[in-house]
Every structure is written in C-alpha cells, then in structure tokens.
Image (cartoon, rainbow, N blue to C red):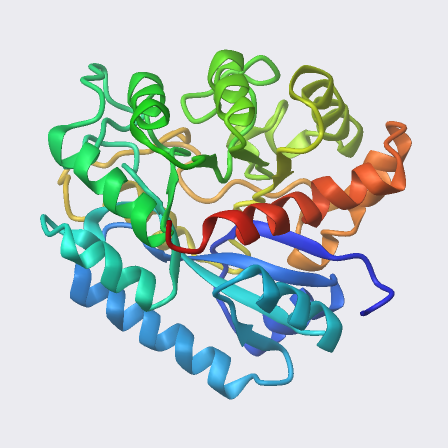
Length: 328
C-alpha cells in the first residue's frame, strides 16, 4: 500500500486532458467521481462514456476504470486514479426503467434525481413548487437500489430529497453541496436534511464551487475548514467527505450549457448574474485539482486527528463505495 494518504474527490467536471490526469496523480487522488451527463439522453450519455473509456485506455499509467472500492485500493497502491462515472441528471434513463441497470453495467455509480428543474423523477432545487418524488421516481429508486446505482440529491429540492430518503432502501448522498447554515444558497442543504441523510448512513461531499462558499471566490481555507469542523460536531465525522465540483479549464460556454441545456430559450444565470454569467473564480487555495492536499492543512489547523482527516478526505467515501456499489 502506498504511504501517501488516500484521497477521494467525489465530484469533478473539468476539461479533461493528460495534464489534468497528471494533477490527479500528483494530488494523491485515488478516486474521482466524474460527471458523464447533465442533459444528455441515453445515446448521448453512452457517447460520453465511450470518450471516457478512451481516456482510461490511453492513460494506463495514470487512470483505471473504477467500479468497486477495491479499484480505489488498487489505484492507491499503484499510484493511479480510479475513475467512477456519475450522472448529474436522470435524463440518461429517458422514460425507461430498464436503462438504469444498463447504465450501472456501463460503470455508472451515482445518478441525481433532478438537475435544478423538475424531472420525470423528482423536483429540482430551482423550482418554486416541490411536488416531491413522482411515481416513476419511486420505481426508479427501487431499481437503483437493486442494481447499486446510488441516488444523489445535490440538485434536488428539499421535499423531494426527503421523499427519496423515505423511499430508498439504501443510503442516498449529497455528492456536492454545503450546509445552508454556513452559506444560504439554492444549492446548499438544510441542517434537517443533512442530519437525516447522514443518520441513514448517507454522505455529504463538501463543495468548493464558489457559489456554494461563504464569501464566494474570497472564501478562506480557514472558513471552509471551520465549516467542516462545525458539521462534524453536528453530524459526526463518519459521513462527511469532499465533492469539490471543480470545473478546471472549462470555458464559460460550458456553464451556460449546464444551466440552460436545451430546455430554455431565455438565458438562465443560475446563481450567477448577467454581469457575472461565467464560471466564478476558484479560491486561490483550491484553484486547481492539484490543490486538494491543502484541505488536509486546513483540517489539521482545526484540530482534527490524522484518522479523522483520512476519513473526511477519502476513507469515508471508500467505505460508502464498498457498501453501496454492489447489487442488493
């Protein structure tokens, strides 16, 4: 086993290249959950999977295909990064329950129930009315539980998230968000929801995306680390992790597409604005993938033990992978 710490970043959407894969390796990231789908249908999602399969094939010294926790351990031992596929929307299953198992077979391990808007499964966090999980959503959760495709409520509304927790027989996650008691935001989550999810052995991955941070791009490492310490005092250490949501190297046209997809002719700025429509600047202590180890420094200064830091920065997600990526 490598003497280096085992880090896991449970959400990234960068402009992928060999140089960024090298940054993952330099940052000791044993696993990264990468976004495969935002608004794509099944065929388009498969095209994205083919692209990622090619990345893995042509970068064998840096990457390996992740399906289980054992792949993370293998990557850590060999100095590589295990890549896990996830979907930030349920658009890839279209209206067909059978595609859930197919996507899991293709490597999918996380699927969000909605992406800001109302979906066929659940209500998004930007909607004014929250009708909760739909009938299709309840059936989808049952099938996701069966095959080992984890339900993610990062972009899902409050009631729909609680409904998902109620109707899922397995833990669900918030892969990338922060508590709204630290920074109010449409995308951040309530104390009540985080507490309920972590008490049910689900996870929250703390986000480094500036719109989710107190003081945005000017958020300090101390403030972020203190938030994690406060969260640990409320929810315990064992179900906390990182989902940075870093979008390194992406052009502003990408965030425009993420927000609007093909569903709107009117420009939607999300949590940005007309004057600041593009990607916000990352904090200077987490501007690139290779900055991940700075989080260890921040947590050390908050008084976390070595074991607690190892849990938050990787081992908690690894335990979750072991327990939830397999069929029921």
